[in-house]
Length: 510
Image 1 (cartoon, rainbow, N blue to C red):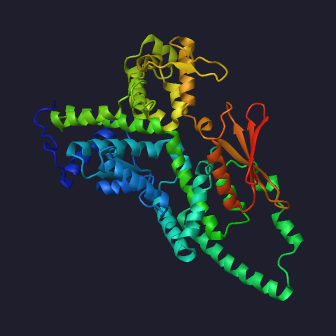
Image 2: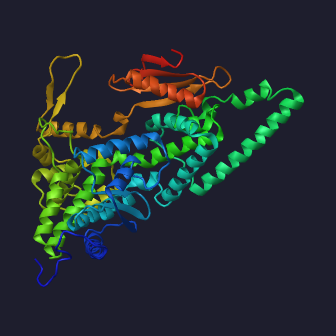
Image 3: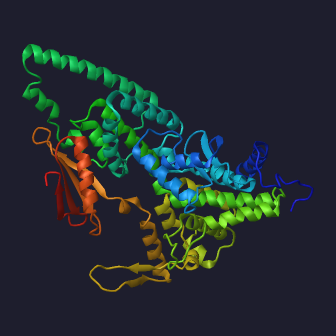
């Protein structure tokens, strides 16, 4: 403990002056010692009801209106008021500046903890991880959210709430199939989108007048030959197969008005913005937890917090990283906070005190004196699946008591297929990594074909992995929503990914 240093705070209550002092001390450690690189921070203190409201809108500071958000708010509020569920200490936004929402009910100790966790841990990860750098635009998200909120509100006034919700319901049903997974998505700015919207409105108005004049003076609309020329695009021009179903519907649906296409675009853009977070839950939370743990310990060593405050912070920390046993009624699977934090602590151990086993498994960084740069490099260049595949050590596998159970549908018994030996460690790591790979978790459904000259039926193809089918009711409901956006029948063909044999067919005609 450093002598002649006065703790930043000693009581339970917080004030903005104390928050500033704590922030400055945290920043000195985060930037000066850990070498973190963060966006400017904007920390806001909000009430529990405001936190519930942020929950319901997927944690975004601005959001268009939709009945599903209200449903989530009522559910979460009821659980919270009855003591059946708690609230997060904070919510952090991937934006520039980085916005952190802290609960006003937090004690000063918890405010210090969550500033270290969110304003520096999550902030650094958002700014530096390659998925967020390449696939999201932190600089323009606030403007885009404001544009989206205003655009949907204006559509509700002009076309009616029911008409807008009808499109939003259909687009929300396809959000998981509304992202680009394998190529960089187009990312227009909010200003460009507003210009596009104005152009679409002007074009729609001009086209309506032109069609009216043509029908009244010539007695016909577009000729069949012109329609064929416009609609007769096939696979090369439509970029088929297309993995992003919402993108295809937005660009090519013969049924959507310009304002409806814009709403589909809004839903698709926000789904793409949130997609990297689905791929980095373990790394993102592990990074933030590691950062706050390091900073809190350094604050104690420097005499800037009291033993009582440290114990309160550690109580919250251990609750966050708790990993229930498999037979515990509260077992949710592997806790991403626990796994991420344990792996990052283990990386530091391998750098500082490597064993012979560590030197064999991790020759590139075992024994590296600069463990901080090793962690920063990992935070920047990996996602959950690749991070686990590269950095999960045999020592941590033993500590977490991991093994693989194979469930073969053709056999009556479960088999423990991978145990703690050299081959087993590699298979355990590979199996665990695959469980975080969205390519295996989200159904691979693509637009395979459509004949715009013929019946205009939209044909989708589901690449079936390991004979895992879609739940029939949800599948049929989503097909009906797709038909609502497309305007014509939609069919879905399920084919085995390896043999390409057809397994099932479904259609809105059935």
